[in-house]
Image (cartoon, rainbow, N blue to C red; front, side):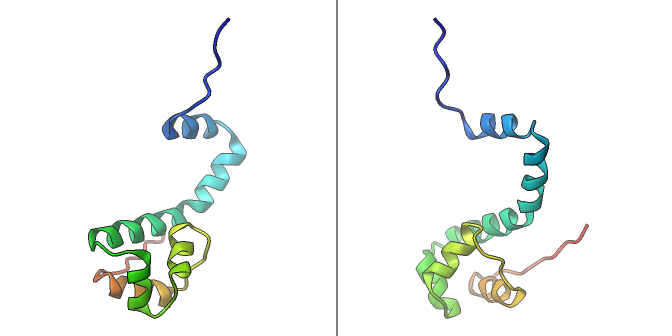
Length: 96
């Protein structure tokens, strides 16, 4: 009897799901939010800051940063600008 594989790596799961047409279109729709979240997390960690540290610097609550990083918010340009200033970085928008 062959044992069923119970666990997948993230890459294996992604490859499996990318074969589904409905998944691909939804994945592509979320790409901008994913990029923003990854960039904020990366910049914050490089500055050795917690979500709470970043939130205090921009005058908001930690939950706002959590929602940004968890892709559970549609941030305004002004909020992204405040985040960029607090992280001593710049915003670059690329429309293709």
